[in-house]
Image (cartoon, rainbow over all chains, first blue to last red; front, side, top):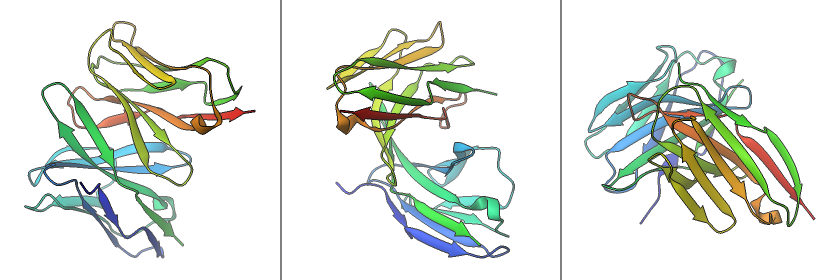
Length: 114
Length: 111
């Protein structure tokens, strides 16, 4: 079974540009969440989607947005990039059973803003 | 706001020794996760603890959860070099579907 796939793996952008990151969850997983990881702030929750609906949103400015498609693939967009947006962006898909729950993380997209 | 605190943040230990990483959280939650991250890699799920008193073990690692004390521990037994990594605990918010992570414990196991 393929894991969570994130593309691209690396991105270099300049301030003011916008960027779109993609995430394909594990087949059958309908929940996709996004996290930002930086050395200073650590891992922070961005948002979570389930069946194309945003269920929860973290404390990030409106420049950060996302969406989920009918096939559960998700995209995250950051507009008007700032230097502080440089980070590893991780996507995770959630598997929930009666007795267990697990998040599977992708390899991430490393975004550098110059 | 849910806060998750791990300690220690840095840990250097000798092979063969035992040690415990602590994870405290500030508000009620009954879901706690432990992850491992190797340098330049993504997060690998280690344990999911879903109820008070839950204990799970995998190899040299054992995790436990005390929801009344709002405390989870990750115990390392007879450490080996391969366990060198950063370990994160994370707690689900009461609204669900969003994890709050601790700062991570950077573990180095030396000969």
